Amino acid sequence: MRGAGSFELRLEPLGKHHHRATFTCGADSLDSYLRNLASQDMRRRANAVFVLVPTEAPTDVVGYFTLCAYTLEPGTVPEEARMHIPRYPLVSATLIGRLAISTACQGQGIGAMLLVRALRLAYESAAAVGSSMVVVDAIDERAASFYAAHGFIRLPGSMRLVLPMRAVARIVEE
Image (tube, rainbow, N blue to C red; front, side):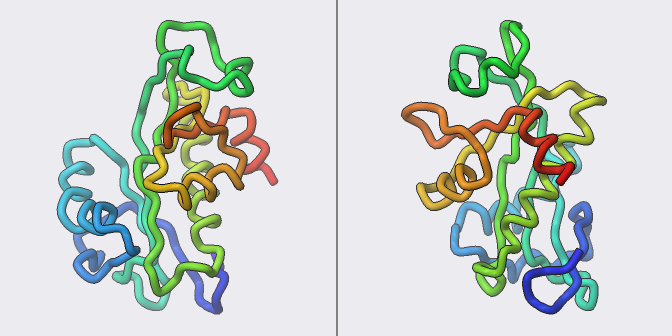
């Protein structure tokens, strides 16, 4: 996978060899998570954590995201997305809990590329574990706008956005 710049990027599960201490994306909570909790979450299987690294410097983290299973009450899903979900007491989903790009690499299209990779993994696992949508909890309005620009539908009065798996399929099959 080629970054917006001139370097090759590779996505891989977070490992002990990745330099996390120097990662900064401009959001303390996202930086702190990668530095202090991500490995623990992976050991406990609470989150899958994937990092984007340059092939020529495979220990440097350019960006990362987390994925985990999630459920929503059907009534919380916006009307535009409701027709794509089963009528169960809880709707199965995949949560992109965090998505961050190093400040040095922001503004190069790497965030969109990383989001597509997260959506692809969510889509591929949906057949095995059952997931009818992808959910994100935007950290701020800028992040909410980023997700909305990629087709996510905002839940009224919140920073939560959803994308039905049918829409994910269209994105990853492009």
